[in-house]
Amino acid sequence: MARKLTGFLSRFYLLLIMIFLYAPILVMVVLSFNSSRSRVVWEGFTLNWYVRLFSNHQIMDALINTLVLALASAGISLVMGLLAALGISAMRRRGYTITMGLTNIPLLNADIVTGIALMLWFIHFMPLSFHSVLIAHVTFNIPYVILAVLPKIQQMNISIYEASRDLGASAVYGFFTMILPQLTGGLVSGFFMAFTMSMDDFVITYFTKGPGFNTLSTMIYGEIRKGIKPEMYALSTLIFVTVFALLLVVNFLPGRQEEE
Amino acid sequence: MPESILELKNISKTFDGKKVIDHLDLTIYKNEFITLLGPSGCGKSTLLRIIGGFVQPDEGRVFCNGVDITDLPPEKRNLHTVFQKYSLFPHYDVAENIAFGLKLKKKSKEYIRDKVKYALRLVNMEGFEHRKPNLLSGGQQQRVAIARAIVNEPEILLLDEPLGALDLKLRQEMQRELMKIKREVGITFVYVTHDQGEALTMSDRIIVMNQGLIQQMGDPKSIYDEPQNAFVADFIGESNIITGIMRKDCLVEIQGQDVMCVDTGFQKDEPVDVVIRPEDLSIVPEGAGFIDGLATDVIYQGAYYDIRVLADDYEWAIQSVNPVMCGTRVGLAILPENIQIMHKPRSADEEVIRGK
Image (cartoon, rainbow over all chains, first blue to last red; front, side, top):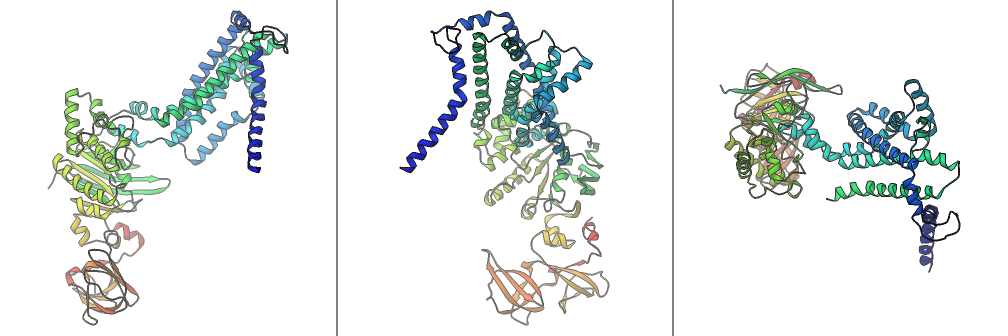
């Protein structure tokens, strides 16, 4: 009897948490299909808001900006992060500890501090625009790539690289055929993590962007001040679905590879 | 005089302030099976990695056929390594593993196919072409690793404790196999191991190393029968090493008893180390040997009994085919030619240097 009760309670508790986490998002998703502008009354299903969303040039420009920014910053930080991780893994104990500490600071630092600091720095050297935002995003993305790749480097079997060199492979060929394939899992999750973080960012983007350049998050922020339109529900739903899908990929891809 | 193939001149290497190899000179000859033998941390693996090109020496040069190869990267050296850990490429099958070096040399498809086939037959692995390495046993993986190196026809094959991870029976089987392969391909083998049995079985020449220095080199029999210092005597097989006094040529005092030996050239009354192999001692009735003692421990080892005899605070190790009763008093006898006399080292430093 007591066991049944505790079982019920623990499942109920889990359910409460799930509701607390996902009900608001579910409400937003439902409202994005509501034919009324009302936020409380359901008046029937429509894809109208999605149509209007995609015909809105301002939103579409911001979407493209966001995707280009996320892809570019994730790509650049992937290469830089991989090189950094390779370097860090080769360091001795002392240098390793110091460098990893320095690497973690941008992760723990409040976004607003990073944002303001980067802005102050950038205005000395360049106009605030796409480029400044890109550099800012690369800056905060590199640590994520390092954190994803470093464990893979430490686990990898270096002796097969040495064996390939021994059998006549150059350092570059050995790296691409023996080392890189072992790091794929870490690189993929590092890339997607960086991509998601870039898509997700508002504060740092807001401070480092110039006038006239908008990502989705900064654009929505600007729109909200004029009043929320249901297109925003549709847009947010799409972003949620995208990020959710990416997270699924990040979580399941490395696991699948290890099973093979 | 055999032709030399590899020369190490004055090699030194320090890791984290610890001298791993200390001004080492070594010449390796064509077609010999040479073993670097020593306890872990003695510098033998580092020496092999210096020959292979994976570690740069701090000092000294490496010559192959008279050409200085010290600064060449591993891929430019005509020698190949069989690593201790099975370092097969996990994403390639057996045939692709073996073909790796040949493909890099841009050999023709037919040539590669024939060579892979030949190499697999050489290591007794025909029919395994399309297996993935993770489906092979440890012994099979090591065979493939050997085939993968040999197929490139290196002048020298470096083997870094290749049998270390195998069980005893498989190890003995692989030792025979390695000697067979060595005979068939007729190239120089440089073998690293800490297993003295392995070294004695396979080698033409053994280099005993400790603390980055060569302690002794020679053929297996001379290393075993005439160890030049207490370290070698102790490391190669079990030994009784006891302090004695050289009374005159061919007479040494051990535990207060004068015993005949065959060593000459020591000073009168010089303190010396006396080395006696356990299998050279025989158990005789009390009073019939050079010394008497109490049998304290008798362990059956299959082919012989491992017996300990306590005499004047020294515990003698004896291997005998005949058992004795534990707790009986017995005598120990020795033939003069089985006693090995060594100068005592004057200091701990000399202990390791004298081997040179």
